[in-house]
Amino acid sequence: MTEQNLIQSCIQNNAAAQRELYNRFSGYMFGICFRYANTKEDAEDMLQDGFVKIFTRITTYENKGNFEGWMRKIMVNTCINHLQKNRKFSEIINIETQQNLEFKEESISSKLLGKQVMQCLLMMPIGYRTVINLYAIEGYNHKEIGDMLNISETTSRSQYIRGKAVLESILIDKKIIHPGSGKMDWLALFNS
Image 1 (cartoon, helix red, strand yellow):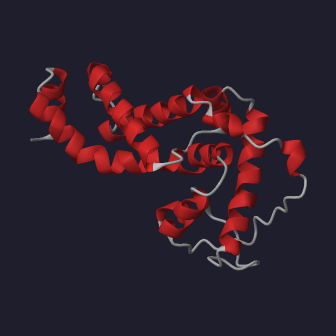
Image 2: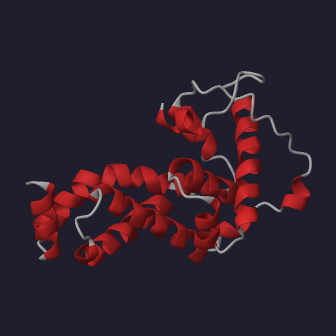
């Protein structure tokens, strides 16, 4: 079934089409959810909630742009809502209490294995991880992130900068990278 036929069948609440849409995209969407979740169970809850929203809002898809991108945006917003609803985003690190972080942006190689980086990203506090996901992976700017998370643009920017330093420290501690290995390239980190 073509994507267009699949969308039309889902609009008509065809259960077989909804199942096919889920089967086609659930693996990819689960990966998105897992980046924001603390546990596999949280990611599964986010995924389920996201697909419910996709099926209830599919009539609003206007065939403009990529359908997968449209679903991805719904899934990311679902993840953010889940974190806020469960107060998990309140773990944003207080900038004043983190004065001892060293910023070594120039020391992360752009040749990292994505799987190792993602494992390290999951070890980070949820506030840092969320801002890094939204900025470096999803491509939102700091104003958009601030609006999504009900924080200031400056806080988003600070969380991103500090999150990079924390991620670098984790990567060094895990011996994935070595200090002084080169400039950090965010796109290379997550697309390798």
